[in-house]
Figure 1 (cartoon, rainbow, N blue to C red):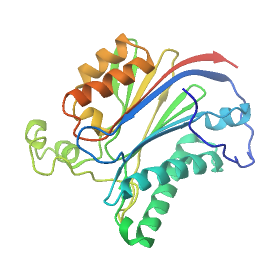
Figure 2 (figure 1 turned 120 degrees about the vertical axis):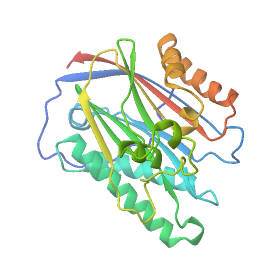
Figure 3 (figure 1 turned 90 degrees about the horizontal axis):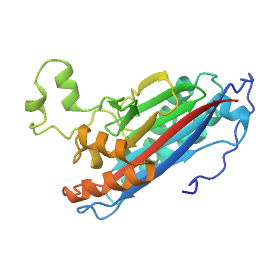
Figure 4 (figure 1 turned 180 degrees about the vertical axis):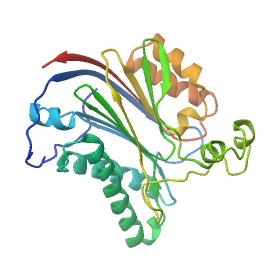
Length: 272
């Protein structure tokens, strides 16, 4: 699959970082309108630098956003968020990828909020954002909202992110158990989004990266229809491209109640 990005001008790097580990990746993605929606407000994007200097400092960037808002505003929000995140992340002066990723999420939030305030039909628009950053032998995930990141390692599937939702909040506080919370009228409420008037609090997840790790980032149009065991089975039995198609098609077969996006990234590490 061709890389769906435009080149970005990366700021001069103040502190050179040696490239110790090179990441070879297989990347596949699929998005679908679903069976109910009239337009697709999901957006996926990725950016893989060619410069060793930028690879050493910023690595590979993979994003999924799930927009929300009337008059196609959600589609605009997710488009603006992906572009802003990538550009700010690449150009941020911080050496630490997590610091740069959090700053990029805040920059996307400010931009989407400002555009929503400036255009009446876009007021209140917003989007989730799940960013997977693979830098040398490190994994960094920046999370806003309820799109998700998973990792398949040695046959074991782990959900990396926790949804920033009303459901997860009341469960964490011990107010309700999961069964009751997932039947509640507020079960679809998200507590964080890029855009709107909320104070943004992105979640940050960091861990080591190993050869053979396979990642899935996806919108809730997938996870609303597929269980973790189903995702595990499809990711285990097929490569990135085929598993994307299988997962999205399975979500559609189960009703396709929302836009649905899946991006799968499989990595191998080699010494630079």
